[in-house]
Length: 104
Picture 1: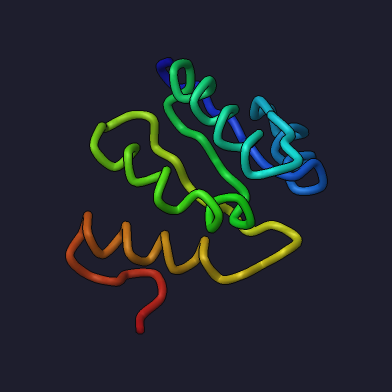
Picture 2: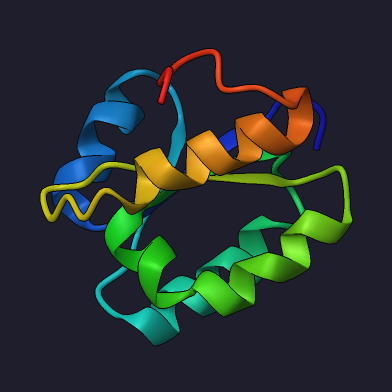
């Protein structure tokens, strides 16, 4: 698991990550994303998830907050909802106690 990164999400968004050497797992629906995350979580320490699926799986993703690894991070997709940005802001504030990136 050490140092391995993956991305789960729609095919259009994950292509960029795949080009950068991140293991890519395309999914087409919420059920597929959930099943893929379960499998990938056993082997990868950092998992990027396109925000269109992160929003759909918000409750499911809470289980990953209980352990140090894997870290699941939503990333913007073609269907930008702002969820990825708000998730990162919240996680940063929890970890650091302050907002150092968004300055809101």
